[in-house]
Image 1 (cartoon, rainbow over the protein chains, first blue to last red):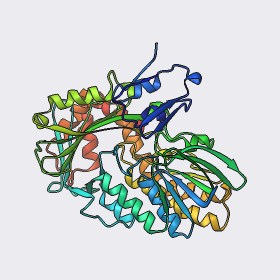
Image 2 (image 1 turned 30 degrees about the vertical axis):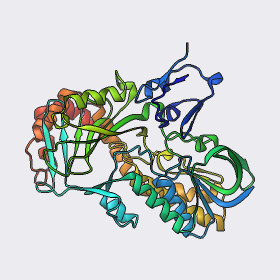
Image 3 (image 1 turned 180 degrees about the vertical axis):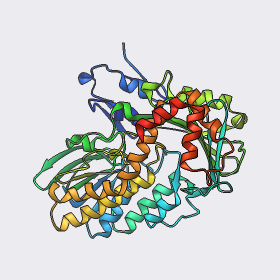
Image 4 (image 1 turned 90 degrees about the vertical axis):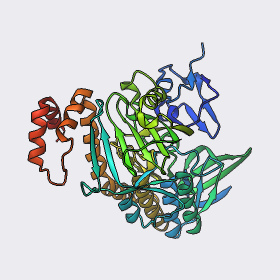
Length: 55
Length: 392
């Protein structure tokens, strides 16, 4: 997952992740990408378009 | 290893309230927050009811009250206004707009003065259930520490992991998590001062736009949407609204706030052996407005009181169930009622919202009876009444 530099680390993505794979630190997001099923819920929920799927 | 009676994770209003009441009850309490500054950045429109503060025994303080709410303006998509101002109607809930950055710190200070130890910039990286308690692993500025507590209180917000790590269900499913964004703006113009404004309809699918005044020309201008009902992201809807609003033509943003709001109602189970969940992490949020300061603090107060007593008696789920009962008794009625109103509003399209507003435009709400309301709704929008019938 690409986290854009304007991410506010608000935690919306972590709150909606159905598999609980995103940990929010004060200034960082930690994704357990190996367990991600690419549902894109976090990308759609981000209020400020700060997440992008890596190709 | 550091041992304590109770660890509260998250120093928002709910967590600080839990820590304060647990400490007042005689427990040894540590309140942890991952942020370097409690209360910042805010993720909130900052509205709170006066009655709610009174019930919690909190005296309003000019250092954290920015504005008294004098009324409510509801605007539907065609620009029709329904005004509920103090000169026209006795408002069911008067309120204040807060300065959360100051308010949250004051609440944490209250907890500290009650005896709680505060650890800022402390992230919980994991928990382990042990006999009669939890091991809590933390990281703070490169330093790893291990704590042991008899009761863990999760007040770590809608994105929190603590409850989920402990096997409890998250407060909201993805579909019930609003996506919110807000600017704090200056040069905002108001038609009536001190009135909080709500804009309904397709300007914010699944939610609404708000303008909450914080000063003569200062306001929180924000919105929340339900992403599965929306075609764009929250900030795109907000920028569209700001560009079109005549009241914001000269407005300038001095801050942006972002965050999620769990509007699905309170979690069914708020406890287990040695653990309690409160605040946004427990869905203690008004599903209609998304407001969660008072309800979260009420939940926190119940959690803190029960936890302190449990330390003296029994930390198992058998005893901690008392918190669940108290929280549901205090909050269920309002949360369930507002959930029904929210569900009803979600069924209405822009035309139906406009019709309803036309029916009540200029109406004196103090004098209107329920029968008259029903008659008016039948006249302007039988479809809206049918939908209403499903929820009553």
